[in-house]
Length: 157
Image (cartoon, rainbow, N blue to C red):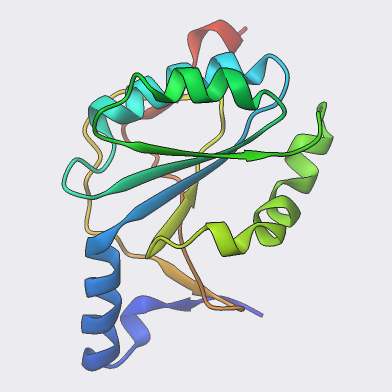
């Protein structure tokens, strides 16, 4: 089933959606093993650039909970929600991420959710009109922004 675009909604539904969106944005990321170090760099860049006009919560699914809690104490603008999962290697982390998100959906309460890989960096201000897609199950998901995000240099060939 294809997603319904928010633009297809009635004006009243759009107003309700916009009021939810104005409240918060959640970013979901799976970061186990050494990827938690990449996640920290991504989180630092998100603190500086990502959705400056919105309440941002980074949901990190990791096997390194204690380390993330220490890292999270360094942020002032964004909130970090640490969710413990088993250690995953590639390609399991990629293949299972949406299953992981769905299993933890009760913890993902922001108006809009987006996925950002742990090895990405936000390199410019990103604060567009949030235009989420409404997916089956009631999820409001934004595609990962293309402008202002790049892969971390340490992972590029």
